[in-house]
Image (tube, rainbow, N blue to C red; front, side, top):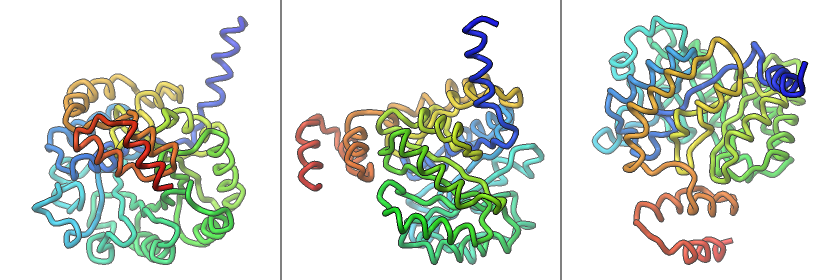
Length: 329
């Protein structure tokens, strides 16, 4: 075997695991750039691409409050009312499983999350900041009791103190949640930090039957690389989005992830078709992906809302923006 063949074989061994599941977050995370006002053709295009590509889960949007996020201001993928979801997927008679995310303190989950037998959704993902964990635990139990698979996305983990993080993961292990996610909300983490967090989560969850997931943002051009490191360390649930479409700097690119996994059940071509036909035509309007304002918020471990405002205002004074952000530290 040549040196190149040995390298290729080693790469395949690292990246191929039957336990790995890929979740597409294009519409849910990308909708944060346009208030979830996607045309049905775009949502259907992403759904069909996920089906054809062999993706395991598609997160079609949020189940968040219609009181807090009025329907005349936000698109249907902020709320995922059942009739809207079925308008796109029908009965979803495919191998693709569907999920929606409910934010702690932003979701009327008791009323809006239907019993599983009444919904085409398969999984409810609860997003929570560290101070919202008591509510998140109630939301997890509610979704579990209604018959759903569940995950918890602990947001802004780069801001959480280690003692609080240890306590939080232990609480999640004692809950009925199926997957606990490491979430680099601000695109701040380096690979060594991702490795340490995944190892911590795996150590606490060992023997519980729960999986560890990874959700990354691309402020420092590390979303894909950090996802790879999480895979190597044992994370089995992987979030990505088509062309990286997501809030601010965006997410790990689905097309890069599939090409790395070397699993014959995944197919790249449908994703490339979706990029060409549906996603890239929106780039000029939505302006997601790596750029310097998002780099600044990333290196300062701050929410990208300031970078989003910089771009929305068509500002060009990057140095002034940097000085403003540093002065807030």
